[in-house]
Amino acid sequence: MTPSTHGNGSGPSRPTGAQVLLLTPFTDDGEVDERSLASLVDYVIDGGIDGIVGLGTTGEFFTMSVEEQARVMTLLAAEVRGRVPLTFGVGNSATSVAIELARHAEALGADGVMLQPPYYFDHTPASTEAHFVAVANAVGLPVMAYDGGAGIELSVERVRRINEQAPNVRYVKISIVDPGKVQAYADGAPALETLVGDENMLLMGLRHGAIGSTVGWSNVDPSAVSRVHRAFEAGDLDGARTVLLREVVPAVSPCITAKNGWIRSYKEILAAKGVIASPATRLPLTPLDPIRRDEVLSAMRELALI
Image: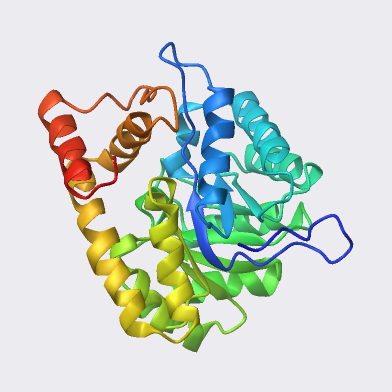
């Protein structure tokens, strides 16, 4: 676990190691659950996580108003208290809104922001590039481009061009299941550092040169994901592979059998563990059906995770 250095004169910390894509707990009536959010922050930090990324897809930013997103940022900054680096997702198809959120993150002392391509319309490469550059140039924080966010893949050349115009676009989260793309960034855009966004390609991505991971499973078992990183960093490839294949991949598998199932499954598990009070999500996400819920929780009992 690496404490954040932002605010002590040494600048924002790099998002290395195990970065958790933090869930946003809600109450049964749909409000942000502040107590559960604080509990979850403590849980992942105590589990050895290296950094927190709030308001990504796993954090259900897409179900919140801009005001709610800003409030969650404020709550998270107060809860994290510099214990680990903190990055905020600021994704929005309206460039002006993304800028507003990025500036709020900067005012709170965040270590960086994560930005996906504008969505809804099929935007031209030039408009996507302009969106990233405008947001990045509006703040002094490092920006993590989300390659695969909203299902939109970015080309290595496109992100390289963005970086040339906005050098603070320093990182790329790759959520497409293509570990070779990590190598493609290393070869074609060496100024950019990459993070793996999928549990199944975690070790392959690290071997290709990724500096860290941003995965949702770190909410549920931060220790296992962190131990994959620790073993890899220590040069123990076999040890990293053992943890990944015995503890991470088998546990994630039953949670991704439904579309967007991981968010709902992870909340069910954390509620069963007592980390959060409710597995509630917001529409358009609906609860897991009873059979899926039973299979997910039964699998977690079999794996001694609840």
